[in-house]
Image 1: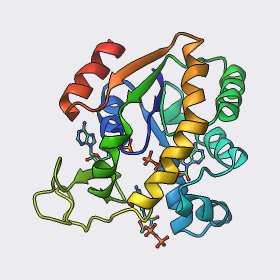
Image 2: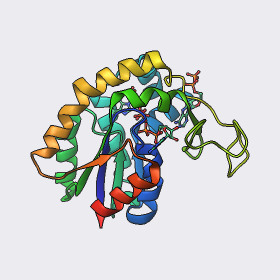
Image 3: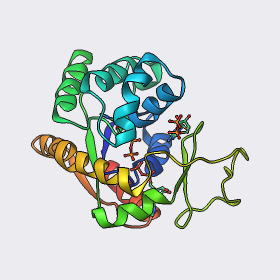
Image 4: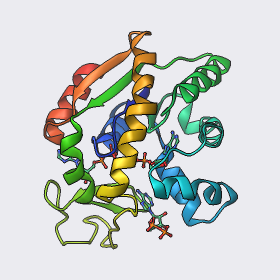
Length: 213
Ligand code: ADP
Ligand code: ADP
Ligand code: ADP
């Protein structure tokens, strides 16, 4: 399947992705993870992206479109993909359509992680991540067995620098202003499925499975 996950920061995209990936798709492309890796490696792309990311603003369309265009060439992405956090602007959505048209394929479904803003601060400020695998924990909702330690590898967990209440505010503004129009864009194509993203993770997984079955 070819899927897009859209939702504000903390809506649960990264939590549901591995489950969807294992069941339906071979490749999971998360532009946020790719950009953070580029920032950490101090690549030219990372250097360009860092300032916007630190402020909770979107990086330029050209930059992320380039990343996705490159990533979609991977053999593992030929049978299907999950785009997590892309497209985030209507321009990105239009560019994606062009890229897919060239490849003769189409997006099957857009999963909209619908959720009220009020819930997101607690989700974001409690988030802990295992950087190399992308595994996500939460101090209250999904605590690791040992605080600060990944269950699987025993390696340390980190908190994202932009996971503060202040930066969340900018990220939510960007979401409402620039990303919500993307949901309208796909609604016109009748491929949007709305999820109740405020529910517990297992309930959201069940909704996803119903939509995709
Ligand atoms: P996103 O990728 O959309 O930014 P995440 O999947 O990283 O969101 O989730 C944000 C935080 O909330 C994480 O700490 C995660 O463990 C937790 N979380 C994810 N889904 C739920 C849920 N349905 N209920 C409660 N907490 C959740
Ligand atoms: P979250 O998981 O909280 O929704 P992401 O990890 O997807 O956040 O994104 C982190 C940051 O990376 C964003 O605030 C933005 O600066 C940048 N970013 C990620 N994806 C895109 C995109 N498609 N377009 C522009 N900027 C992006
Ligand atoms: P810096 O202080 O160098 O800007 P950060 O404090 O933003 O770095 O993050 C610490 C490290 O963890 C960096 O190497 C960053 O790229 C990485 N990182 C943060 N969040 C994630 C994530 N969700 N996935 C992968 N790597 C991440």
